[in-house]
Image: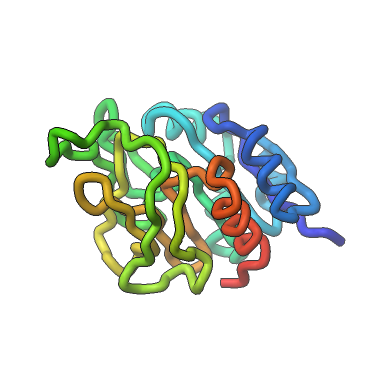
Length: 209
């Protein structure tokens, strides 16, 4: 039986592009779903996210039983999990966009506005930028150095530096990826990052944390 990858549809992600990228990376069975039972039975889970932290969190918690199904499958069942952009930010304890909003609290920290420390730096952080590995390797070789496509005004500030899998620089260091156990999140968009993004998704499909 081919693995089933659940791509969670909660009204807050560019699902078509992510699904096509996953298929191009070799995923044999991508289930775009808002059904907690499908998520609970999936072999791998991807949570995309576009828009504000608050709107994405409201959309995710708005699906009855979805957060519980994700938590059960990932933390009890051990399914590899990938969060993309705001889907990565939702791993945090809370987000500060449009007020304080709770996150999943799978990776302790908060999502804060990018501070404009250099007047030449533009917010949002948009376009291609380097991805440099963090001091630790919590993603077990999943993240590699390279260039990826970013689009965000808020950034993940983890409490524990050991959860930082990669960094980028935009007028100062910003977290590009976080990881803990079988959970990884990337701030950039793999589906827009061409060869670099597809190779990351391909490694995720083979990842056995």
